[in-house]
Length: 107
Image (cartoon, rainbow, N blue to C red):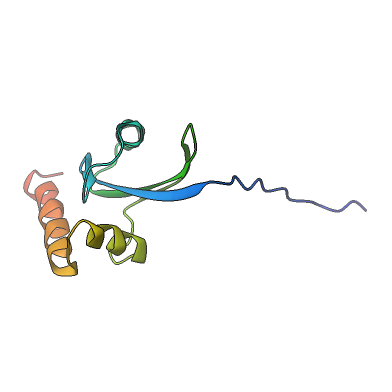
């Protein structure tokens, strides 16, 4: 009887998480190369609200993971927001305001 083997390629490189909220980088702008890729993927998926895109930083960035509607209390998200000067309260208020826009538009 044969054995099953799973091969997993590990790509060396720095991992970077980028967040987008309603087609805008959140909480701040990021490199144009990443921004174009993130916005295209966001549009193709017809996403709304908050989304997370994880890349491996290389000469040509590799999209490793996409998470639609990530946990706003995720440690990586909170660290990213804090580095841009956002505290937890203002972050949650902003997310609630954005979610209210969909409701007021009847989406």
